[in-house]
Image (cartoon, rainbow, N blue to C red; front, side, top):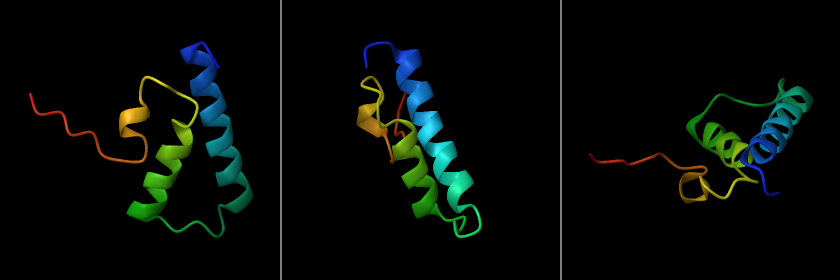
Length: 59
């Protein structure tokens, strides 16, 4: 996917679909939040360096 907006929408759709299908079974945990973050940014190229991880911007 070329456009960042399209990439973000695709990742958002997949994340929301997973939540809708599995909300009764998804435990709120650091691991699951990182997994959802990874899925959310799956199609994006710009944010690939931190998908599923914490940003560590030391400024």
